[in-house]
Amino acid sequence: MKQNLHTHTQYCDGKDTVEEMVLEAISRNFDSIGFSGHGTNYPYDPCSMDEQRTDLYMRDIYAVNEQYQDRIRVYLGIEEDSIGQRFSHEDFEYIIGSVHFLIHNGEAAPIDYSQARFEQILTDWYDSDILKMAKAYYDAVKEMVSRPEVDIFGHIDLIAKYNENEKYFRFEDPAYLAMAKDAAETAIANNKIIEMNTGAIARGYRTKPYPHIALLKHIHECGGKICISSDCHNRANLDLGFEQCVELARLAGFTEIMMLGDEGFYPVPIEEAGC
Image: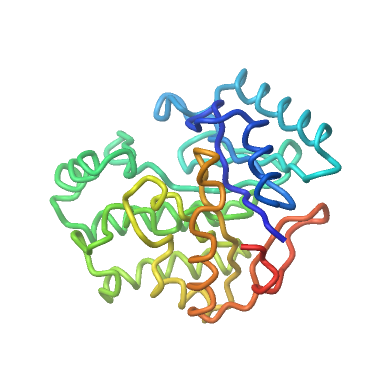
């Protein structure tokens, strides 16, 4: 089985059309692919899909699923932002929940737009105290994973996007790790799937996927469930880093990976994950 549920198209901030992404998935022997366009989050995220683009996005996904049904299963999903519009399973087959923005004194700002913007938020809003910023981030994560509509939580330690070389904090700093673990435990208690995500590798910010191995091991120890995605914005990276994810998942103790089928999410033995 080979699947990626976190993909973006030209309807938000992706490079490719829905059909181009599907054809790439077929060429790489995917059994299924899911689309997770950025749900409406105006005015904060101009790349998110407005109502018109969402309608076109849904239309295209229904069309390619019918056109290529004998070759691949195409799932209709959405990525719901913590400060954006909320969505329903009446319209989408699955929902990824993510925190991209922090709010401070009524103002919202993205933590993953650029390293310069990240440092500006850290300095101006949190007095250069990364633990204060991390607390605000993981508090938002805990709220997001408590939402009943969310199936998967995306890039749970996104706050570490620019921390590959531990410039801002040590990944195993007990104070930081306690907050990350608390958020992961909240996700697990709410039966959310936690995503292993290679998107920052594709964009040149990291060499390893989210979450960090220390947090990943804790997720396993607490009985958490994981899936693997590339957070794909360019079809060339559709399965980027999947083998590395499997290796890290094994190292953390996982023997199964969650995948989506027509009857819902189900576990697949890690050796059958098709990565």
